[in-house]
Amino acid sequence: MRELSVVGVRVELPSNQPIVLLREVEGDRYLPIWIGAVEATAIAYEQQGVKPARPLTHDLLRDVLAALDAPLRAVEITELKENVFYADLLIGDGVRVSARPSDSIALALRVGAPIRCAEQVLSEAGIVIPDEQEDEVEKFREFLEQVRPEDFAG
Image 1 (tube, rainbow, N blue to C red):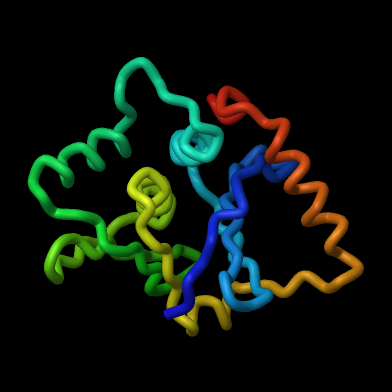
Image 2: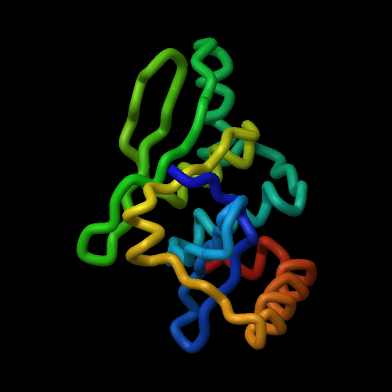
């Protein structure tokens, strides 16, 4: 398993499909995952420090885990089958729960849990951005600084 960090979310044009972009902590591969608008909003809210008046689903799950004294230890992106990513939540003392990567990432951001990815998934779906394309990554970062969570609302 390789540890990843969340670069951010953006909307892919012309499809208007949100993606979350992850990057190897100790490496140069990026992992783009297409996600739903609700999950994109949840991730963007957390990254931007937006606190909704009422808890979102991911906030609720964070609070339930805390109330049960069952901390989220890590998120693992385990498989890629037919262009669908699969992940597990590692909870408490060895409990493993299957979950969508987008929900898993939104929850991990809320509790500060590490996000890991199987080497096989990174080998298959990870991309290396050549130096001459680093400008695109910088443009993406600039976009992330300007985007508002409301931009992901359907």
